[in-house]
Image (cartoon, rainbow, N blue to C red):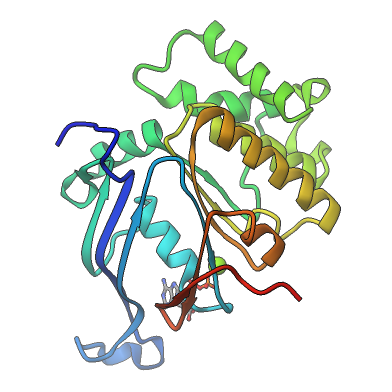
Length: 246
Ligand SMILES: Nc1ncnc2c1ncn2[C@@H]1O[C@H](COP(=O)(O)OP(=O)(O)O)[C@@H](O)[C@H]1O
Ligand SMILES: [Mg+2]
């Protein structure tokens, strides 16, 4: 299937994940599995913003990891831009991920021995068609300026505050102009004010680059900034509505 504007950016059908039941690890059989994600259906259109909320352990990170192609499901299908990512081999999936997907983690996950600039340049350098070093340098510099960190280009993660590290991580996630950005509790390790700043940058870049946002959060203020809020409970969606604030 070729790329088309009317096609959903992400289409998930009957997606499920089982894991071995660790309590009985010595004799694991097919019945000895835990269903951590039931059959999830989800359709996300280009430019949409979707928040996934739900209690700890409800399967949010598992779902995000599957949709981003970081993990493989037990059942179901995932179409990214019309392409069934589960029919791709590991290398093809990694290439598609590099081209289309950005990911922001709660724990930032910057490379400690790389400077801020080098961390942001990395996705471009990993792309087959990522352009020259000078172009990567230029784009990474622009993104860091965009999140207010021009002065920090040559600092290492350990020399940056949590909020600054997360801004570097956001610059890194956006530098390859992904169609789809996943963020797993991006403000979970930040204080309210810093978290707010980080989120502002994410939504600004989302608008500028027309990126589709899918984020997991405990923060209802953040969730309500998304066009859709989906709630997971015990590995299933239980409702799709804006969350009451209070
Ligand atoms: N690799 C795994 N092996 C066993 N259990 C797992 C694994 N990954 C997640 N789980 C379990 O699946 C459930 C959902 O986990 P997770 O997706 O991390 O939830 P959330 O992000 O909503 O807190 C939890 O009960 C967790 O312990
Ligand atoms: Mg989680």
